[in-house]
Length: 325
Image (cartoon, rainbow, N blue to C red; front, side, top):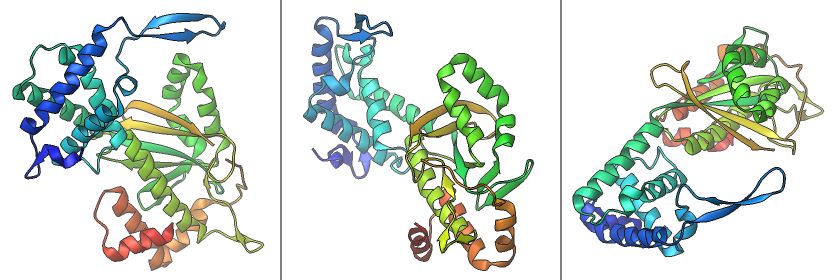
């Protein structure tokens, strides 16, 4: 089923979506009316127990066709409200499923156009709430250093000494560790890094922010590698812990207030995989001469800043962006 079937002259049509929403509602009600849904949980002592599910796992319970309809409806609504660049497909799908899994939806005896308006108003509020926080990606970096107190800006990307960063957020990290000791490896990896880079992205969901951060940092690393000394005809490694090798990689994403990026509202963690390198290069001393004297360097910085700020790149700037990668 095409996602544009729910659009009428570019606008989301509650009349067109009504039948499919009601069909989905009926299916969910039928599923929920069966015996309580349970799962088997095996605890740390290897003892299994039956646990009743608090939420309906609709991504498992609905069939492929129904899930396709749900995804199509969510994408159509996102497209009509011009959110496509702001939120990922996974975010809108998962959050729309959550709304459909609420009892007030699937147990309602009738579902009218006004009910549809209310449902999608809630959906819009969820999206707007998600994109209302600045996503500050914290990237652990190897291959150069900064003295305590030094800040190096490349485009709008901020690099700082890892110990300065740890000190800045020490109370926050301590409270997190008191809440969950399992986060200790995430804190330790900050100590193992040479630098911390901060990338602040506005008007995006968490998934999109992570993806954009990766794309931005690839270009920033490429720009820096053009300036750092080479060894034996090969550039020294400069990049994210875990980027090119297979040790654990830990990443952080701070959700900060739109008007005050110092106010951290929530933190997201992710773990993937990498290597360690030389830390004898001072990033400030390496970059500053190029920022002061080389027009090509500052031009590329401007392109990076435009991309981070969600400003449209010219065709030529897009070619430079692609070439950097």
